[in-house]
Amino acid sequence: MPNRSSKTKRPRDQNQLAKLIVDIATGETQDKAPDQGKNPAAVELGRRGGLKGGKARAEKLSAHKRSQIARKAARSRWDKIRLEKPST
Image (cartoon, rainbow, N blue to C red; front, side, top):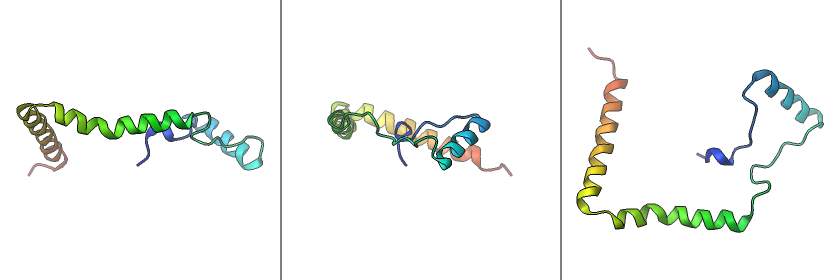
């Protein structure tokens, strides 16, 4: 699933969106590329930081704190499952 920031911005109003689609189809407007105007070096630098961020955070946490975080995540998942199932 792509990040939200990588999508092109589209109007939320249905009428404006319809006009944009017609303008693109008739060639009056160009559909913008999602990475237009971004510096490739900055994108790569941000990606490198994002790839090592979670691992570095996990190494920094104590075993007890990691356990607390995992317990909270599991409880949240189970609560979500309980809410989705109809009670009998």
